[in-house]
Image (cartoon, rainbow, N blue to C red; front, side, top):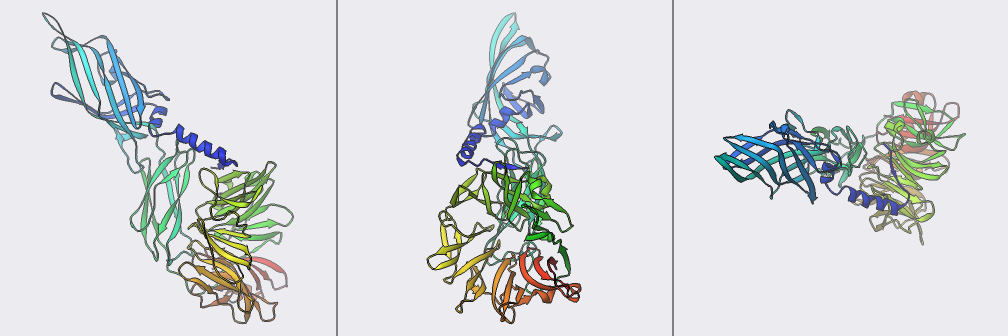
Length: 590
């Protein structure tokens, strides 16, 4: 379902505050909902306790008032108890004072003519993991009501003994449990995305997960309870926004964590679980065994898991998604735009970019596995810069070239560290780190931005080219001989040079996956021959892609010319020369 945010931040903020006012607490849900299901009630009269079980208390929508027929409780009376509701914080107070249409015979010549009193109840949201029962079925509502101090009642009438003797008897309310509000969306599914290349990392890392509800969340949204069996893995309840059916959550992993753990999610009494763990790190080179040729009408620019690519149709101005199954999705048609420019993709399968309509630019994010559903996020008047694996967008205002904005539920807000930097390249990972290339007095410099902190990675002239979700930065810098060489940097290791294939004198890094494998293109001693390669995470080897081509491509005389992109499932996108000397684009997979 598309989540659309207004291009004007003040209006977005106003909408946020109005929403908070409209949905102050769960009492608002009781007000909006119909009927209240009484689960248990107990009163004490003259030292004796009287209890009742499940009853349905009729209530109209958009009111706290109740009109409860006495016959609803099996009493032979035409009395309708008019309970007038009011609220104070999370407490609902019902007051009533009704004269019976006709006296009610309690037996022994005793008659009731009037009932009055006050019932106070605490209102709290039913936790997603709770599944209370009303009678013999699960209670569908999202608010539990329990007895609060200050509840009392009186009954008045008379007893006939030669003559009538009036009486008023106190009634103590000892127990009250009921359920009201609106129906609770039930948890339909839950998943955690673990990139194929992810393995234990030396620093903290994060994974992204999704919860999907059976129906849209009510006013104010709803929390889905989440917990991990392994307490070292951090996860918090996630709020599904009002009107939406899904939300993303973050799983925080400690350093060197391998797992496994089980993550539980619950909403509407339905509990789901998913097992999470990471594989051992792959340190040895792998051969490619699968491949496919991209039609020459397309110029591929991005690579997704499963071999899907984002490409530009050479005779059009808009980007297209080409799946590994040969399907083509024109993104301008999917998004109802005149032109679409994809800014990038991430390890969870998101596609993000800018869609241009007659009204101007619109930043978007959509899921490649559900492209027909259209945009998950849509921001009118903004241009997309990049996005991380949690689906958080960085955008810019086309009328303000100096600032980059981070998007949350409220809308875009200026990124505190990117204002006025004017970076030429911006990348964003799941840890909230931003990799940028800056123009300084000494020339270009690769830098890390986190919050307000800006840290230059090397003293050498350098530029950033890639960033993975475990905090490893990749770029190209000039060495002491003023030749470009690829480097990696992390908070744990600082900077180190990457190896180059034998015979290469310079190289440029192109991409890195979460396992630390780096894709690059080197230049041989003749200054002309290009040598695409994969560098291992330990920094010990750089393997030419020609050496690990599928055997049938080797036999056909294919030679790789340039490395273009690397996916987390270890697929690579390359430009190659076929046996007839024609330049082609290939996707290679292990």
